[in-house]
Image (cartoon, rainbow, N blue to C red; front, side, top):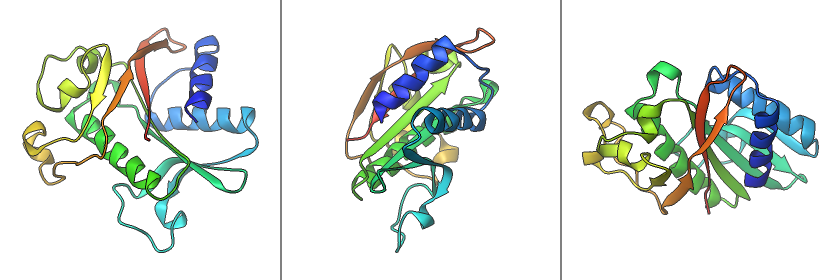
Length: 190
């Protein structure tokens, strides 16, 4: 699935569209998947209650993009695209939460589970802040479990998140139709 998503970003770099929010980005990716990979059964915002019976305890209640290939192989893509003015601690926490969800799905025999994060907020990759921000700062992300000390007090109710693995990815650069610079990364949960 990672190769297909990379194909999408290559297509996007040659025929950019305006990026304005996560929902719009999810729909553009869904349209691309349906157009260029018609053998995939693509569903957006798919509830986990339709993926499992009985429903296991999972970190998320729905998959951003749920895909069935050849009637058998199941894939999930989780997306995060913080709004321009609102990239925050909460958005970064939710990326770690998505990774937990994807790890849980891999444990349920999902073929591929991929995280896609895209933003134009320089304060994320140029951050000198500690806490959760340090996991995203620099030329690459180094994502892992987060402890109580790394999250803001208002997120304490969500609690620390324990991941099975650690995940590294390089920030990639892309421009939308307006010429705005965005950075993104892809992580495949193993």
